[in-house]
Length: 263
Image (cartoon, rainbow, N blue to C red; front, side, top):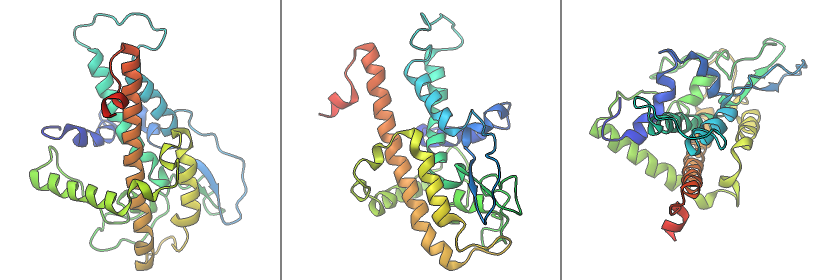
């Protein structure tokens, strides 16, 4: 539910609709790039063609040109507006850009004990830690930003929650300013974002962890900055993508672009 802060509140829309008749969009949240570990060698698995990387491209283009470049005139349908389609796809895009920056939305780890993969760490079980006792697998550890954000906030957002989230956003930008990223890193094409996540997973996600045991304090302390940096990177890239979309939309309509407005 959205109220005073729809742009932020709608970020969970893609998850909320999965169990309300949109189960076909489930694979749009991830891409299970194989990570062969512990000496395992197997044939490359068949990947879902409709994955998060593909989905970002599809919803992006559906915002810019909902009927396609050669789709003809927009039909006059009073109960389904052009704005509805763009709004729906914008909600998906915000969520998917976040998903792809969580490393385990880009990887499935294959080992001799798990030759069919661990589904992005969902099958990599861990002992629960207090006080966030519902987190019991590696995927959830990284979804929760290494246990630091284990709670869900009821929507619409209450004023105190909005203030808390605003503080978190400021902290993320202070810890990870744009200047802290390599030249051109934030402008990397979205088709390459999952490759970054795979590299992060191989270096940091499974190392220093033991399946079936609790995550150590040392793991938490060393991985939390990495997860928070990914959050900041995803936010910066989302802002750039939104600016590019606006510029392309206005170029099609002949209006003033966002780049021209800010000059």
